[in-house]
Length: 415
Image (tube, rainbow, N blue to C red; front, side):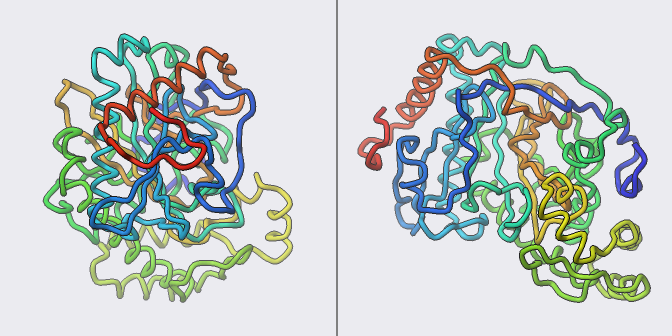
């Protein structure tokens, strides 16, 4: 698996279990479109509910996904027409409400009645959101909509029967390799931990993969079960992590290229000379020396792109993913339960990205595998009966929330 970024991966990365493909059920016609309009017009009949969180300016909406990640999935969207991308763009109470609704989704999935009605068996659940405000030229973790949205994905046991593990080192294709574990996932997590310290909002963090089995590579925060999402802790962790990621990204980017500003459309800045980058990294007081040395390794693995190369990337999306870095700060945050008993901790894992073209919802950790690439285009087409079952599942979740007179937008479906 040797390429120019190999030295940025953790020891033993070649042995980490992953899966390059897991086909998931799909609609007869996948709706792969960017939201260039407002929320209600774009999502239309797929809006199941929408309301303003009391005491906040935040409007949130439950959306039946246009392009599913799982047989049973949905997302809570920051539904104001002016996009709110970051956790800090929402009021803290608004974020807490979204996270508590994610906790309620897990409860709904795990209820015996839901499991029996929808034949879930030993279902897998993953909650996830992405952040990328600035990349609009090439594929990225928030390609379809720059509004904050919490993915809630549930795979029944029967849909995981084809899951097959392979060692990360066996992945030959460099695009797939960097998609499964981004070159910045491990190093970026260490940078952030240097800044935040060993705890965030009192919760312990970990960056070494062998200490958090089954979690994606990244900065993992241990939460005391799914109920931790329903209180102030998780929202505080996420907002602190975002502010830390913004600061760390700005300072390291300035050390690399002389400016903290994100890149313009199909523009990427030239790297500063190695000696200047070394000097600037040494001036970042919170950055550890080992991390600084590995950042210099990253600098030397990167290369400047000339106008001709940028133009070629514009014409070839795969080439763009392989050679053009993301325009600004990009990361995903996934939430999944650690292997073990029913009350095992929930691992909230932040994964920084440099080149990745897929968000965390498309790369969940499943059955102990660190990353599973979901094939959303060639899985079995859902029958009318399966689509009706999916709709009933989502409306059952909505009904379980007891939202009462929650507004349903024009054209939305009633519970």
